[in-house]
Image (cartoon, rainbow, N blue to C red; front, side, top):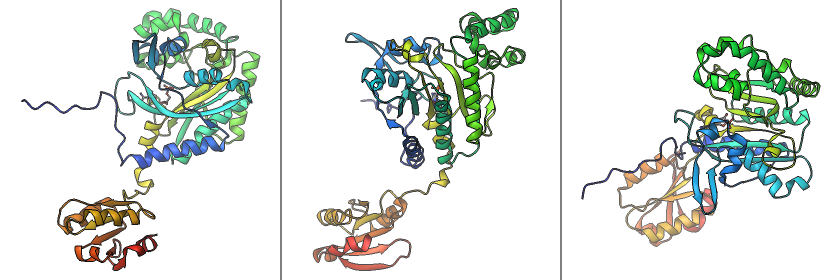
Length: 416
Ligand code: AMP
């Protein structure tokens, strides 16, 4: 029989290995602790949703139009792997009656998202997000609160050097008139725009402002700016968000080109980048207000604001040396010879106070000691057939090299 090729992981996904996990867990723990400090409760929603939920609210975004993992008809429903969390969290909020409870609901979610993205560093097909949502709160205080929470999370995982960009994109009262102005400005330039931007000009002109095409950048400079065209309510909201950020001493840059392409996004949008990064770099956290989302999903009109932070990207920014490595096991039990029953019993005794691994393989004691060193064990418990028969063992302190013979019953006290 010809040997078959080993089967590798699907394209664009990545394994999170034990060596990565201290950083990964640090990012996740900081997320949970920060969210909890701000009074947010955890919610877990399914990884699959009805495709229509995602498609209805995101038809014009890449995450949905090009990147959605969709199953054709399982039973009676078309399903999709969620590409982001907010749609599902808002669905769960109404479907489970959280809208009948105290308002707003402060919720957070940590979990995997799926997008058929072009795989590259920091861009995966399965990636993990920390999502924070305030549903049922329209005040600018909530916008500033989620921004502060995001910053605190990033700072807590050791990312001090950050750039925060903010903007206001108005709402359904002021944005339509602005979009007309934007189209008027761009129409004479149409022939100089690339294919994507030509399409956006009539369908989704706001997205012209976040074009990444180099030769289109010059056009932005003179384009009308949305935050100069806000209605009174949006302008007041925007001004209060900025005052709140100033009062919290959160440094921010207003980027008039920071936009979201969908109608249900309103007012505040923001993104956090690593400090040294230039404009093209991917954001660590992206968020904003979505006062039109509930209605777009078919629920009563309800304001909301939140963000999504990329745990993979944040983990990649954490300095590995800042987190001391944890040994896989504090104690390694090394039987000298075949003593599986005795070794298992000694391990069980030691496990009452410490993490313990046992080396059952018939290897030389020297080889076993090398393994104990590689695991980073603090102690080795050596067992010879003679000692084992008397229920004795030798404990070796790996840092000092000191050895001591003990009764098995004394091990927990010695190792505690
Ligand atoms: P978005 O939902 O596209 O606004 O993304 C929010 C955050 O999720 C981004 O700032 C990234 O940190 C992270 N993110 C988005 N897409 C990916 C991806 N394909 N791979 C890894 N992280 C991602």
